[in-house]
Image (cartoon, rainbow, N blue to C red; front, top):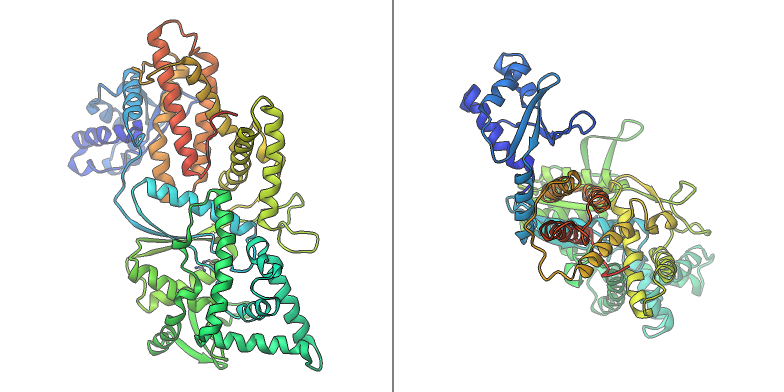
Length: 587
Ligand code: ARG
């Protein structure tokens, strides 16, 4: 890893061991960026304050002893003991330059390789034959960014699209399909507007269910219920219709994933239906182990600490009184599979925040049964996207706003913006850029705030070329590309020298790339990477204002600055790629 804090760590540890004994060799030296308001130093080391009590000396004395033993002449220019006893460390320019040079030469740009894990990522996970809405969109965007980041860090990542592809609504969906005909335009809605198909089935079912006395309309409800039984019983013809619905659903999903640049494919589908054969066994085992018991005819798990309003225990129903299984049963089978079969070290569920209680109860039940071994299940909670009125985005009729509506709106705005900013470009080039910009605007606003907090969907702000937006970062990359093009440089590999403060600040910022990505891999918070890339772009702007590149005073300075430009470009482009955002050649 190239960041100075990581490089400095063993030196401080060695100094502590020399001063206070070998037990300090592994101590955390507590290194942070220096407080730029108080000092011009680069790093602050808080080890002395943390160690004072155990060492039995005042912190400033401990600090002095560390300084006395600190031996890192190539890295450290000067050390100053400040405040209650922290160390302000200024790094040597030559070290900064050489570290940036090494990062430029490194194919991995300084990304570390943490101990390899198997990580299952459950994301997107929409309900089949219904359209995705904003929470699904955000799950897809956040999940895909985590997948890209974890893969880049060298982990074995298993994507799972836990489609809602089973359950009672398929009775009415299949009956509706049979009535309209599998080759009809209506059935085609499954590919173009699945919500509309769903609504068609739903309104028939409702009308039939309420019809009194049950006439031919009432028939539809009766047939739908019968169809559910046939489906769950494995009736071959019913399964054929189910496959027809699922095949068309996949066409719809793949179109959306392609449009958004989400890396899910058919191979990643592991829907609810794939656990169907295990549900009876899950219920029997939980009952045998005494974890589940019959209550009011239903098989339920009661867990300590999960009580409702009236202090009554909340049951987790795993088999309804009519014998049907539910969402909880599937999720217990799911975590068992992810832990015992896939051997996940971490199992991520990138799903809306309201499902937290459901997951915690399912995992607790599975854990009691011994079905979670060496796996940490983690709910990566997705917060709401709200409209200007602060409420969850809904259409006038009260439905959640469909994903396609948002995407279309963003693409349309992006086309307008690019038509204005790059009227000089041919239409097809403009169309490509507009698509990249529109998708970046949506993805970046999903990713730049922490995944569990909500944000307001505001197209104008999201798509602006200024401010903390996806298009701003894309613009930064296009600008650097244009500098490099105008330089006509064959090679941009330095050597890097660091003399101006703005050069130094940029090089130091770039060196943090690896540790920021590693932190995202641990905390599962892509907004840290988004914030970092924004800082890189801003630091670059300051550099470019203060340090002429193409008009540099001599060739050596020019070569060095061009290399810094090239390194910045790579960090931005690869960082954006980890967020799932493309970088246009020109903007
Ligand atoms: N299909 C569910 C929904 O749309 C999300 C599924 C999340 N994953 C899971 N293993 N339960 O709300």
